[in-house]
Image (cartoon, rainbow, N blue to C red):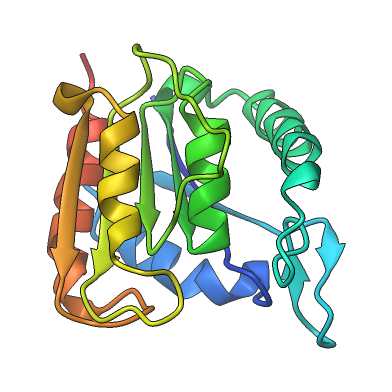
Length: 189
């Protein structure tokens, strides 16, 4: 059965920015892996980028609507025959926060966040999908303490945390754990 990886970019980036990561993961995945990179709905204050909601200053009041819109888009994407249960949602930075808020409430195969953070009112259900939360120990954009905040809100048996030695990025050193986790999450029952 086909499998899918949906990627959510960070604040000020664009969907195409994560396409190379998706293609690299698909090329090394043992099964055919459909890659979908979703574009944030709002223009970023700087030309060329996008945002899921305003961030500087933080517009937390816009988060519920942004999560609802993303949920609808994920349900639409799943209508093509690849169910959510065969889909992993990956987000970077602001996209990681969106992946957590949206993905933990859906019957996904898994959620992966890199350099993400928890939204202030985020309370995931106990039966959330498996989560891999990765964060750089030298991240100057989203403090590394966000990793412990994420882990503290998730069921400990359904969350794996990975602190890597780097900044606000998706470094080469996380590619192997990322590939392994993706394969585990998408392994047929």
